[in-house]
Image 1 (tube, rainbow, N blue to C red):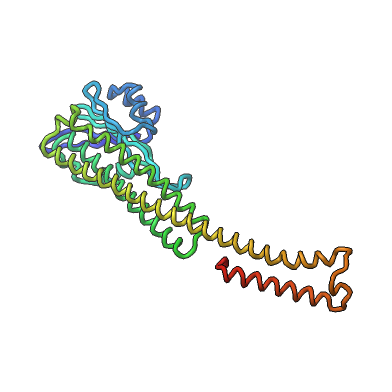
Image 2 (image 1 turned 90 degrees about the vertical axis):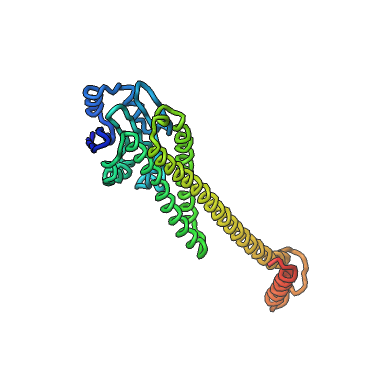
Length: 303
């Protein structure tokens, strides 16, 4: 589906074409009416393309990663690209439905109709895409804090699984912020960067500030989550050790009656073997030995 937005004011005049989920029909229209090659369209609509900058045939192509929010099939944040293709008085954006939320925020922002150039519009779009990571990190941190509160009360397998989903989210977010930064750092030396005005460079500086901040926030959040995971695993291991100790002690205690009664099952003469109250003596001896074992374990701080 192709959505067209015309932006015109005293300073600039260009058209923005937004393509969500490129279809064969869209491809034919873009090839016929806008002279976009099949290779370029395949390149721009690649869902697995990593962030980078490319300048070819008087066109600027920028692929930028944004966070993809969890949904039914995937319970953690992932990432998906938005591709910006700019040439002369036209700018194209290619993306999937999962990236539509960034485009919607851009369309609802009335300041895009006040930009002074198509370059400023592209930078404004990159800024909107960059700050989406901050909101994603706030969501991840909120979920992690909720899990941490539950872990302080009782550790369960479900909470450990939820914590692993948080870790997966942070892996994708860290990867996205770092690859975006690598691409953004190359822009000033590119033909696009050298054509930026002073006002455009201020927007670029704001983008870099937000990108660095998002990257650092993601790293700190990952470190905190890792600490919580390690602590939870240690507590689980300690609980398992305590359970194994208890089972071992019970095995030792229950072995005593088995050993004593086993002697009386042999065809040899033993004291009290023919007595009517022999079972009381055997039981009493077993209990005394068991109590002595318990006392010994406590005295040596084994239990």
